[in-house]
Image 1 (tube, rainbow, N blue to C red):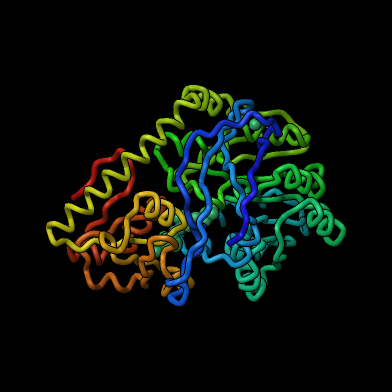
Image 2 (image 1 turned 90 degrees about the vertical axis):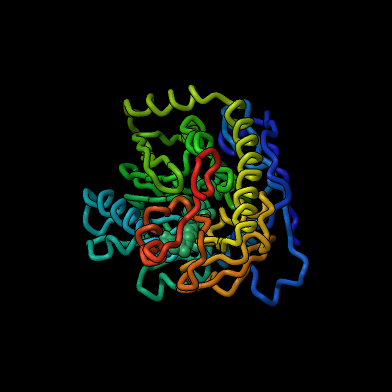
Length: 406
Ligand code: DWN
Ligand code: ZN
């Protein structure tokens, strides 16, 4: 059991006016999928309490589980979704197009290196940085140079001394995982070329609230960003938001471009308006109510299936499945197993609720329904699992507030 520490200041503005707005109870780390030999042993669970900063509107976790526990061995790999690989490779191809020859491109949180593969044939120097030693090793083995490190100001300094400035730094789905964002931004300032760009993707708080994506709240995700919070954070470090775009990944994300100098573009206003219209803390209170409602509704749907003798399995074991199943208290009695394409997760069990994770090929047993826990990949999954559906299998969406079968 590791100790959490309680964060007393806002990660974006450093203010201390933090108000608890949502409590998802004690939860196991969402990616700590259990080996069969670990099943009988006591499991570590940590509080999952969400704070709102009344100064800048940043939403963030109160308790911090040590990063080394969460990220040094990481079972999630970007390459588990072809759509995501395509999304990130396209990002790199576009962003790298105007770069001078031999420029340094750094991806922070490079996972298994598949995004950088998208530009490996270009005349550029590529460097991945990721704390997961298993993923960094896999990337290095394929020739994508990857440092098995957290991105800190100290690491940025080392890279700059060894490789010079980076013309492009990309950090997708990373910022939310970082406790010390001041140190992270310091690292960006150190490493970024004066004319370089930082491209960041983060799930947008507005979409999390709009679509009740409470299962994306877990210990790995320390911050839930509004555009306002991002601007506040970067401005404190002399970094300026240059562009913003809405992308569909992970339930709705912001892709922003940050530079050392320049003017915010017009598009920023539209996003800021959307955030203002939503209002806080009312939207967070609504999220708490939606989560509670989703629990009742999902349990009822699964019980109805059980009474009718219908077989329901889970489809995909993303980290967010751990949150939803634990929060909703959906155990193996209602959902006996989950299928997932990730070899590293197969043979393991969901933390807390303990469903075994099977290869997707097990779907040939034709459960009547599959609860689609990786709802953010639903298009790809529906495409992929055509045979299951043609044979009569149906997917149930777990979204709160959306009617669906059965
Ligand atoms: O920020 C984070 C994001 C980017 O990725 C994390 N902290 C961890 C992770 O979150 P997640 O685990 O919720 O990610 P995904 O992308 O929703 O996970 C998808 C899961 O679904 C994987 O386990 C693979 C599986 N899958 C499948 O079984 N069949 C995915 C596809 C596309 C499929 O066809
Ligand atoms: Zn703040």
